Length: 292
Image 1 (cartoon, rainbow, N blue to C red):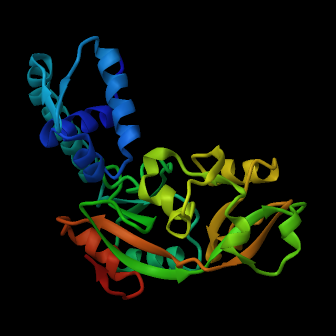
Image 2 (image 1 turned 90 degrees about the vertical axis):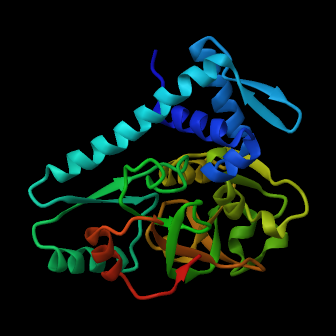
Image 3 (image 1 turned 135 degrees about the vertical axis):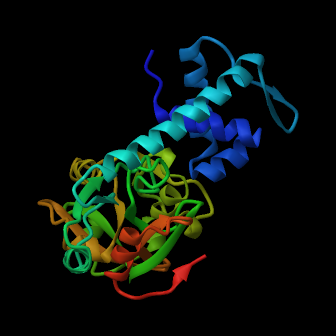
């Protein structure tokens, strides 16, 4: 039986909150995605973990018996990761990222970090959109480049504020326009992030500018999948202006979109993480105010 750490983390959060809505908010995932994962875990185990009651849920006898072991496994895994990193000659800082960063930010930060922390290594880790924390939630990243809104329990500092553009197939009827209003795109099928991305999925679907649900042409987990879906004619996608030059693809054009709030690229870290290597990396980045 292969139970993943993410499933155990979901179980523990629901067990502590005894409410799927609160647990989903804490985990920065959508409520349907959390309920689906919880149901899959129960089917895999072969017994129920919770009994649904009015206004929430309670642990079954099996759930109560499993909870201490689940907590212990998560704690031991986190301790193991820290021990493995400490085994390096001087240490390794893991930087999570979900898309290319560019803009001169990443390269300058790495150079300044190495100057400030001689002997330390940097490991760049690509994280899928199913984890909007960039690996910070499960401890597999030390810091992460993320798009806001950031997951609960994290601190974030904005590095770049950029317009949102729309990526279109070059054969699309709107591709000939120099600029588009969001009203012209509202009824277009959109390429969406996975439901586990939670509020980030909503942001890149521009839900704040809609009064109805978007048409979803495809759901993708990586940038490459997104552009493949666009060139295949499955839909359009919003993208930050700075990423347009990083993701040039044959058959794809970008157009500015009026009427949308800008996107914010940020560096994020765990709220209680005060390790010197994390602070050194933050200091190597452009100065900006920390968000609450």
